[in-house]
Image (cartoon, rainbow, N blue to C red; front, side, top):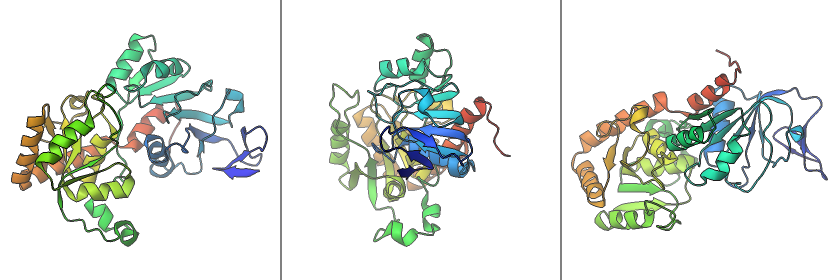
Amino acid sequence: MVFLHGLTVGPTSGSPMLLKRQRMKKIAFIYNSDIRNNGTPTLCFNSVKYQLGLSNDVIRLTTPFAAPQELPKAEFYIHIDDGRDDLKWEAPENSAYYAIDTHLGYDFRKEKAKQFKYVYCAQKEGAERMRDDGIPQALWLPLACNHMAHPNLSELMNHPGKETILGPWSLDKEWDVGFVGFLGRSPEEDRNCRVEWLDYLFGEFSNSWFASDCFFENMSIRYIRSRVGYNISIKNDLNMRFFEVMSSGTCLLTNTTVDGVHDLGFEEGVDFLGYATKDEMIDKVQWALDNPMEREAIAKSGHEKCRKFHTYELRMKKIIENAGIKLAA
C-alpha cells in the first residue's frame, strides 16, 4: 500500500479510499499533477490550502476515476483542466468544473461540463459559448495570481529562503524585455504565432531573453529583472502570464486582442501597455525604455490592482461559497 495526500491506494484496484479513521473532508480537488505540477490546478489547490486556511479540510485526488462511487467522500469536489483531454469519467453529485482551456479544445470541455452542477470558464468567450450551447450554469471566472508563487521584489528580498532561491542572481533591471512561455505552436494552431512575434521583438531589442521551463519564484525573478514583461496569448485568451507579470511588479506589455481585460477593471496605459501590430509592439517597448518613471508607475498600478482583485484565493472563495460551503471568517 502507498500513501498519497492522505489517501490509501490499493495495489490491485488503484481506486483510492479514505482511511477509516479520517473524517470526511470539505473539499476534494481532482486533477493529475503528474502531467504538470506548476499550473493553474496546483495554484488553486494551494490557495485553498494555505490562503483560505483549509489545510485540514482539503485533499487532492490525482488518480483518474471512472465513476463517482470510487471517489473518497467530500462535501464538494472541484475538477480543473489538467491536460487529460481523453479521460472520460462521471462527475460526482456536488461538484464544480473549472474549464481553463476552452480556447484549445472547446467541444471536449463542453461535453464534460454538462455533467457538473457548477461550471466556470477561465475565458469569457468559453463561458458565453457554453451558455449558448445549453449549459446555463457556465460562468466566467478568469485566471489570476498567487503572491506565494508570483512574488514581487519586496517579497523576494524578505523571503526566508532568499539565498537559495536567488543563487547568483541579482534583482536589478538587467534586461529590456522578458518572456516565459512555450513556443511549440504553428501558425495553423495559433492565431498569434509566438515564434514569429518574438523573432521580430528580439530582433529590435537584443538585450532580452525568454525561457520555456521556468515557474513560480524563478519566473518572478526573471520578470523582476526585466524592464518589460512580454505577453502574447495563443488564441486571444486571457492567460496566466497576464496576471503573473503584473503580480511580479513588472510592466506588462500584452496584445490588445485579449478578451475581457477591460471588464476586469484594467486600463491600457494605466495598468499595462498594449499593442495590436508588430510595429506598435516595438514602439511601446521603446517608449517604456525611454520613460522609466512612467513605466514603473504603470507597473505599480497593474500590480496593486492584480493583487487586490485578481488572486486565486478570491477565485476559489467564489467557487466554494457559490456551492454553499461556509468558510471561517
